[in-house]
Length: 449
View 1 (cartoon, rainbow, N blue to C red):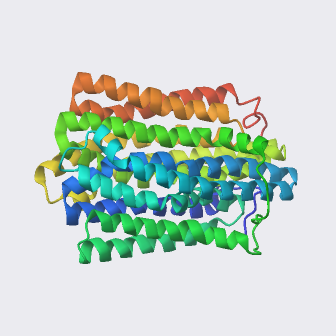
View 2: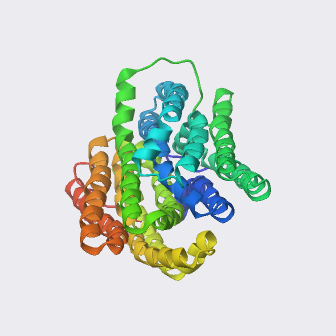
View 3: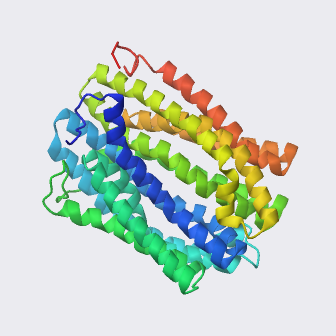
């Protein structure tokens, strides 16, 4: 039985609706993780450091897809809640077409600048060449990369989260098989890993375009449209928090890599890369859940259904709280196992990675709060508050804590800074939620959950 945005949600029903998007974001995260596994084990730790160094720069461009995906989903869901399906389709189509055009432009800009950026980030002679090779190939697939990120949200707005999951699974399998063939069997090294990622993104980004261009059973359809500057501005405002979160993550990662090169050399960058790979999968649970419930929130906000809005909010806090504790426990228990998957061939690097991971795992206890809060306010079409949470989480708390703690504690300060930043951003998020609870109705009416 299909679950629709207009339904009443119990905890079980909400999880059933969210699970496809959660798995979709997890499998999307697997792309870079699989690359990291094959690159580290078949090309060595310098190649792993190169991937960790340059990928944040690529994400700065690709994350524009998140802007159109999350910001567009909020506006489209609002239009659907208001009963204006025609306008929702025009907005949807506009975003897809603009994404394709921007992806081509970004591919050219990124390809021309990749070497200079790698040097600026501190790449030494050991990791400069692989950084340029990996980044140049990934920029070729930028249009598909952006579309893939965009459709993770738009598939939910179209009430087709399972289809989105199936597409992601297929593209993920392409990535894994090609990594195995190109890197593991044919020994093409870092270039093979980049090609595998490009092909998988092509599958994940282009297939949805074909689906929505044809007559389909979803709530959305690609159609002729024009650029609506008012809607585009609203989408960018709504999605700005997600872009701030993504771009600031990239900036913070580049800062971390720079500091780690000073404190621990390429080993530090490689260890940090492992943390990012694993945390990307763990945090994908929070991101996927938040992304999947955003259209539900936007729909009921547009329909002025205060009772269901509160219901979804309360259920979400319970679900995410349980997940946060489970992730922390898993991180502590499996730190050695996870680290060994990537760097077991180097004893010193293995010890550093395990130590860092056991510190970093504490951040999972707090990360769900700012992630969900930011997505929640985006769904309410309040881009300003969402952007504030994302900006403070990264540009203020993460940058501030890593600069301060690295000076006081050295290398351990870098690992602890991640925990401190998530704690501080959680406190800010809770304050904003309580501050706005009555004016935005999500805690202003009684409901049985």
